[in-house]
Length: 259
Ligand SMILES: C[S@@+](CC[C@H](N)C(=O)[O-])C[C@H]1O[C@@H](n2cnc3c(N)ncnc32)[C@H](O)[C@@H]1O
Image (cartoon, rainbow, N blue to C red; front, side, top):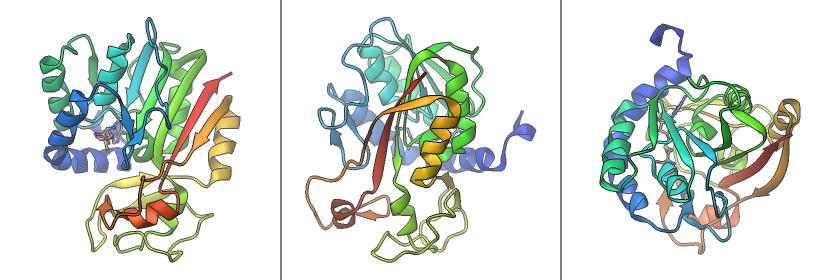
């Protein structure tokens, strides 16, 4: 199976298997929350309602579920949930926390969100918070989400804004106020060999690119938001200074419906 995997899927598997121990604590804290919050800056669910209030009877999938807390929240709202992740090490944490938090009916799949081993039209709702949303090739994973969704199904995802990539220096240093790469050239960013804080392979699109993709695949856009931190503190999270994210969009969320 590994032989057929795209380069970015293999590279990101290796990266996330190594990085998984650093996510255990975040996962534990998030599983313990009774009200979701979202993204790097912890956007309140009231400002950024990524989940419906009631998911009773819905078939839902989290694409790139990591430690699985979003899957847990959907499960508690009444959905029948599948979480898929490319890293077995991340899923170990998800499985342990599911056992500790009464999430034993969530199905965990070790696999690639660009090729999910589930039949067409299996789900009513698909979500990704920094999972497939940034680590998968956009056309590949959103085409797969379309295949998995029933007509009228919803796809909600949160990832980095294209502006934060443009303002991120090529050597991996934190985002700043300079334009370091072409906006119109945005697609694949390989952080594996950068000088500062090497990472995996990420993807993003221009705004036109995202809208073109949704239109091509038959999704309508219900909402779009750019969550920001509550204050311009002198702190840094994931190479984005909070000051920067207070003034410029570091994250974006799309709410889509399959027509
Ligand atoms: C930051 S976590 C996102 C999950 C969760 N919201 C969180 O913040 O912990 C990113 C996850 O995406 C997963 N991922 C990366 N590429 C993937 C792919 N092709 N298919 C499924 N999951 C993938 C990684 O293994 C990792 O667990």
